[in-house]
Length: 139
Length: 139
Length: 139
Image (cartoon, rainbow over all chains, first blue to last red; front, top):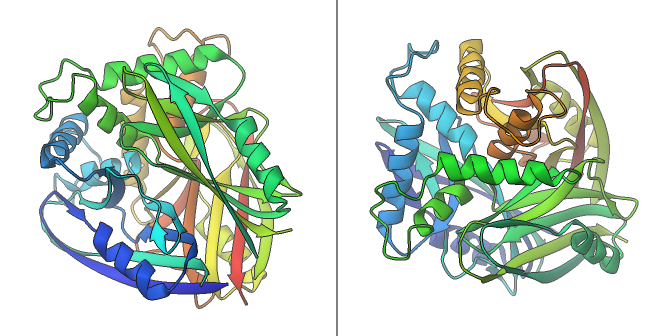
């Protein structure tokens, strides 16, 4: 059993979806693991993970539009000292994902053909986000 | 450490929840693993996984009704060329789950008494969905 | 490879968020595992898991307010025999999380500085909830 851990840093600028699929696949390749599991854990409470369509960028814009409307900034939140976008960012994180795990077979993530892995920044300001990647399995 | 991988194919016909609990339990039994983890990964971006009440089918209908109302098809989505149900299907997937993991003890999933595992088809048309099941642990 | 399993019982009284971070960290410490993965699985369909801000309790109140409004009790649900709060509790569970996994490095969960682990009770009445904790890895 081999464990391989690496932190991937993602620089974000405003609300946006950042595709990290190839970087994660690169870490899996570095690990040398052929059969096992790749665990992704985002170390934040105002950004999140999703696995979604990797082809048409309009899908990403529609996702952002939907969440912006579902979780409006002008709502009367109690927690408001960190800016109008902060509490919505926490809610958007809760409604999406902090951890995901993807099996590995023959040295590759078993993603479907249309699946990409994204870090979703929910804050307006520039951030550096840490995605903890833990690969475990057999070489 | 043993790894056991199998793809479960689920045929769907329209928006619907498909219970796969006993099939997953069967794969765990085939693996022979007594203590470990069962990872479920759905290889799609317009269908999802949930773990929910396995007793009253009305719960499933209420879940479908809720999501249909929360993510309406008549919204003005940018990504619309694949049909009115496609972008809502992506959003419904993001709001639910692509991966789940369930511990295994004494050769069985440690599900609660009311918990069932479901694949949720979010598209109108017939599909074959692939659920990647990865079981790892000790025999 | 070591596996360590323990069930954490949480007594709840009404809709509320229960922080379990230090208890989970205690179980990881007991396991003696230095490098690996901590899997959390909640054995219920009307309570859920989230990883969220551990500092300002106002965030928790805003999260509760948001979900209460998004999933109203006065909606006309088909499944209504177990009380007005039951079907909303199932929906709230589906929109949040039943399983989470957190990597372990140097014997500790790799949580971000603001991240806490919470069990979210979605029912009004008193319950005892079971959180299955599965730690796996190398000592």
